[in-house]
Amino acid sequence: MQDDCIAVALGLPQLQVLEQKELENRFEVAVIYRRSEVSCPRCGKVTSKEHDRRLQWKQDRRLRDKVVLLRLIKRRFRCVWCGKVFSEPDEVFGTRRRSSYRFRKYLGQEALHQTVKRVAQKEQTGEGLVRRCVAEEIGWRLGTKGIAEAPEFIGLDEFSVSGRRLYHTAICDLADKEVMEVIEGHGRQKVEEYLNKLPQPEKVKAVAMDMHEPFRQAVQMCLPQAKVVVDKFHLIRHINGALDKVRSRLQGGNSRGKRRELFNSRYTLLKGAERLTDAERERLNRLFPFYPELREAWVLKESFRGWYKTADKNGAEEILGLLEENIAYGSLPEFKEVLHTLTNWREEILSYFDYRITNGFVEGKNNRIKTIKRMAYGYRNMANFRLRILATNSKGKRSISHLLT
Image (cartoon, rainbow, N blue to C red; front, side, top):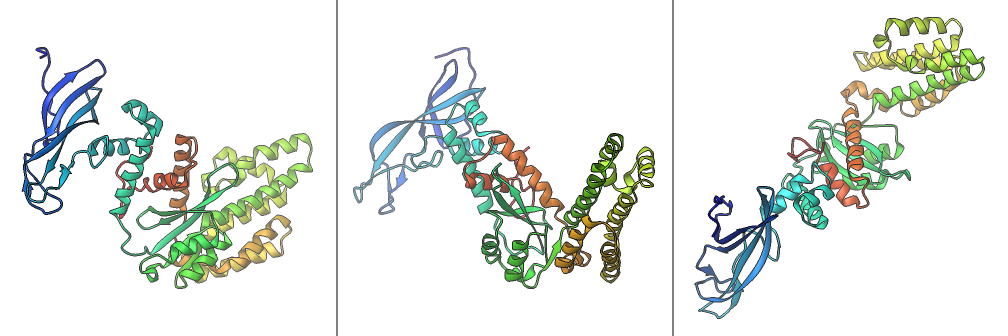
């Protein structure tokens, strides 16, 4: 026996340590369950008669940065009442498992904020085991946190999952700021299938989305009482796009020096007026006298930004009518497309003034999803990708404590 070592608690009170050996890169510990009697699974009576013993190697959490291998003496008992032979219960490791419950839980938690490959290398175990542990950990946590009722406000947004322009849809609870589900594709059918399964769907008051027609049709079909709210940032993005097209058109018909000046002003033009520096304001003041169309487009852009600060819906509807008239009678062909969008989505755009919800949280989640993809260098298994996304919930009904970073 070594006389230059100290004893460290194994932390498994169900097991009795019979022998331990410290090698260069691992600990080997012989253990056996402390029980001397077990209940027969057939007749339920207690027996203490051993039938035989077998050795099984199990892996546990690391100790002092060394792998811990447990040599379990697994016993089989024979019932003296009914004669059945059975293995003793294995509450530390589980039936036919080669690692302890706590080790598998640890692997699942670690792999939530590291790559599977890194965790497997660090713990000297297989990547397949780590993947299963992640799925079990997230699945267990999500499974214990069900949705009692539908949220009042829901956000829908699609995101790209590969360079081939394949899309999936994130459905979020805007009140509790959680991802409710991730759906393959961004068509109407899949969204309808999920919305039809919502408990108490009548509680949903509004659904925020971009101007994606299949989403609107799905909500109108499954949640007829809920109002569709067009995300204001998506509408402003359309307005900014029209402004940039005006700049690009004017830029193409000018001399080299003027083209450069317009090109260098592209971000200044899109910037909010209240955030402009003195130098940026002076730059725009130099441009506008030479390009009245550019000034007209910029004023329209700022008018729409200011319009969203309108206090009530009636006032907003009146101002929107004036803005539409300015576009219709104006000289900017690039904004005619915006007028078409305003006509098709008028009711949904004005619904913002009823609830004032946006898809800002969903867009933030989309950025987190891109980070998840980069960490794993992409996902081939959609089920694993879905679990990883749901694991980013930080609070509420489906809480996951270990966030992806």
